[in-house]
Image 1 (cartoon, helix red, strand yellow):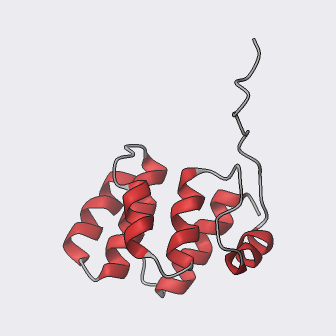
Image 2 (image 1 turned 180 degrees about the vertical axis):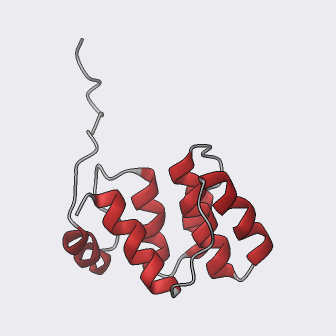
Image 3 (image 1 turned 45 degrees about the horizontal axis):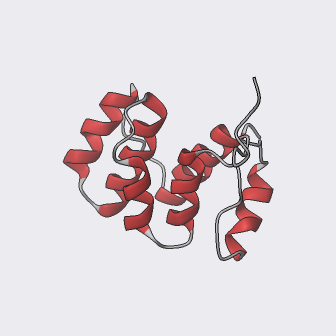
Length: 108
């Protein structure tokens, strides 16, 4: 079966490459929607990050969603999403959690 002409496979990316890509105007092609949301958050666009992740229903999306609400300061909503993700709210800083999520999702 042939792939559609506009199909771009999700490509792995190291954490260092991901962080370096924040200097660009747009997220790298082919990254997962989870990383795309974190990329926009890393650029300071919380709303755009939330818009990407809010309608996804899997555990990984719930983790990113939880982090975003924790960052927003909505701890009650964050607790709900951490629970959906099967995680507890971390005691680490937001920067540390962002970095942990990127590391895990980038596989590096």
